[in-house]
Amino acid sequence: IQVYFEKIRDAEGQIAATMLVHRDITREYEVDQMKSEFVSTVSHELRTPLSSVLGFTELMLTKELKPERQQKYLTTIHKEAKRLTQLINDFLDIQRMEAGRQSYEMGDLDLLPLVQEVVETFAVSSPKHELNVEVRALSTRVRGDADKLKQVLMNLIGNAVKYSPEGGVVTVALRTEPKALVVDITDQGLGIPKDALSKLFSKFYRIDNSDRRKIGGTGLGLAICKEIVKAHEGEIKVQSELGVGSTFSMYLPREAAEEAAPAKLEAAA
Ligand code: ADP
Image (cartoon, rainbow, N blue to C red; front, side, top):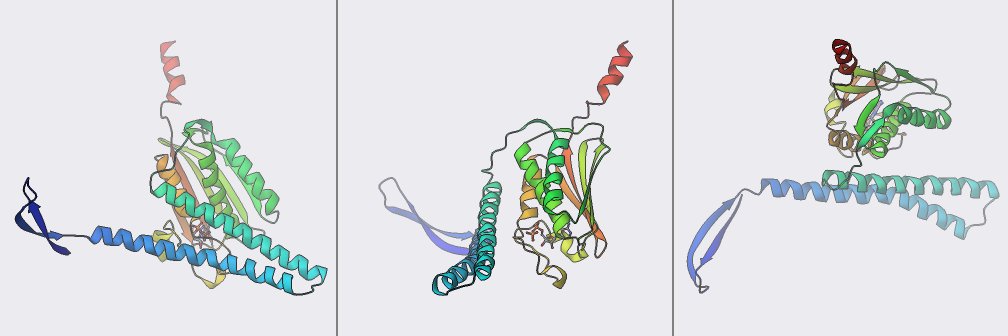
């Protein structure tokens, strides 16, 4: 609680009264706390890949190195620079989305080619995983922003691959519910501990178990997915069992009238 005197002046600017003000600034304080937490996490996250880039470039500039060494260091520098780019893009995305400054180009689109495109990308980059697409939906058309929905699919399918062992099967299934087109992404991976489920979609949240400490990430992917799906008036649900696997389900609103149309025609005939 902030307490202060506020002077009330008359038309001539003379103090006419003093008022004792009690103001509850919990909300402002919380927002401030969140902002400074964000800034310090961001700085920390940026510093890690940057110091690796600096360290390896300095080594390369000051030492005579064998070509194999050079190649190895350059690979690391490239990887870390890519990670920096990813981090900055994720930070900017989540900031813009949370501030309500993200614009969406909504249109009628078919989700199936988007799913196929993303699955194809991971099939090439992760040939040791088996990726399947199953279509059980009556229609795979939705209203949405194709680029943004692709970003969600990249994140969810990417996580399914990233958090499951080689040889694991990842299935992307499209199905219809009365009011939604649902995309279920199922993996046979590490699974998620019960106590982590409620925090999964928070910014920077990562599960800090020994089984996944070596797996890189920003902890922003699911927070971004949540914002995008929310902007589509949909939702993401997750079911998971530790050591067995997970299913992330994206629900997107669907025109219920779509399948009613043929019935109406019949009635008219
Ligand atoms: P990141 O992958 O960058 O850490 P995310 O926001 O995408 O961030 O995910 C948050 C955390 O949720 C991850 O650190 C991971 O531990 C867990 N997680 C996400 N998807 C899966 C999955 N399919 N299987 C197991 N754990 C997952």
